[in-house]
Length: 106
Image 1 (cartoon, rainbow, N blue to C red):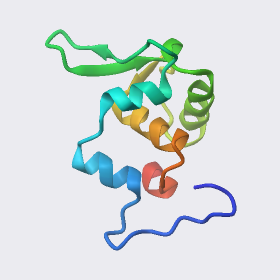
Image 2: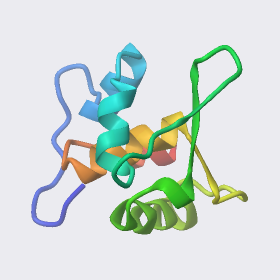
Image 3: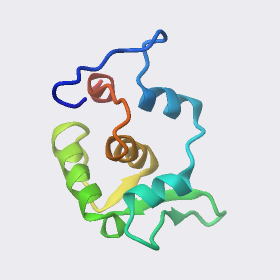
Image 4: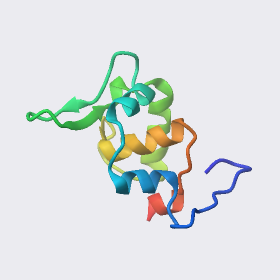
């Protein structure tokens, strides 16, 4: 995804982001530590499962990347709430892991 470093797909054709999302074993607390301001985290559903993030709780760099994603890659009307799927994409971008943007867009 980064300039000067073209994406090379793995044997299974999936980037790190797509592989982790398909496995469904992302650590939500680790994601929160990377994308949120200190002491902030995701919101919970009534039964205690992770639900979403509120944009105001994200770090400034995460907010910038979120707006870039929402306006250029994955259009969405409501920019104040961040789905878990979108939070994982932010996490992978901010930790500089492989993301196949063409797969994300499709």
